[in-house]
Image (cartoon, rainbow, N blue to C red; front, side):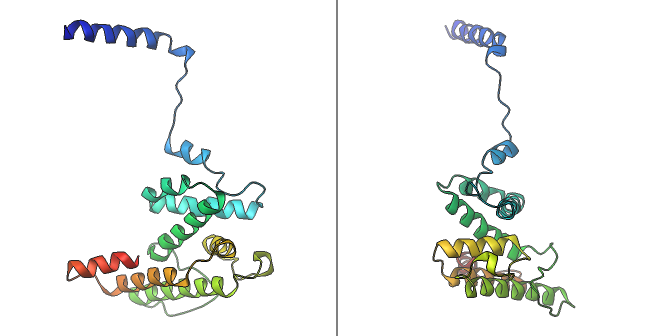
Length: 196
């Protein structure tokens, strides 16, 4: 009985595939999926804004691919832009392989630890600038010419009220990453994870 059933299923599949030219297969790749969702930026957005969105989505996709799909599935343009801006901040502030962000400040980078501390200090200064000028139109300030993530965070803060503490907690966790190589207890690890 199972053999007859199996033959019947195989015959149907063969008949279907012989007519597959009538139903062309659609090749779907992760790149195609992301390309179909590149309308993250609101319609009518200026080219710089679209480039910034493309940059933060590419950053999240490259360094935190698991976090890409949830952001793409958010319902509104603003929520997607905000999600990817915040996620990009999380990624870039902890990215040790990239060059130091140049936010118009200089500092000590003589050792690996001081370089990482300087990276965090520069991101903190960038976030502070975003919060200081959140009531100013992006076209009225040149504070954000250096980073797409901060420009999109500025845009997000103009439309939504986000606490400065969220970003400060991420940076505190990054500071802890510099000094702590191994957490002593599970609770220490849980505390660290909750900060970031």
